[in-house]
Length: 156
Image (cartoon, rainbow, N blue to C red; front, side, top):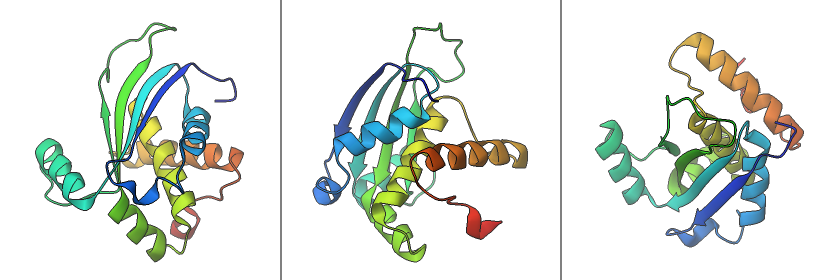
């Protein structure tokens, strides 16, 4: 995580509400902190309608969720210079609601979810307790390098 990996980053704001707060340079910094290898990523901020549609169509869950990661070379053995390719979708409505509920800034919550999504893009998951513990520990470590406190501290 400490060495900078090659990153091709596209940021899309079809939902523009966070465009002036969650800027491309911030996103690049958060993504870079979580990269373990080269990557080609798109970060897209959507409203609840688009978030719900994507979650329903691709995960068969009929509600908007905070972050969706579409990893295009998941499960493939990548060479050292072959990038991870993924789209990471963040739902502005859910981000704002969760941040308020957790008494966090939208910026801190978004940084956490981007780190979470980038780890998913690189093959990390939280389907069982062991995977969840590993992924949460890595998220906490990465966020600490960004000056962000443990997002799971209240759950421990």
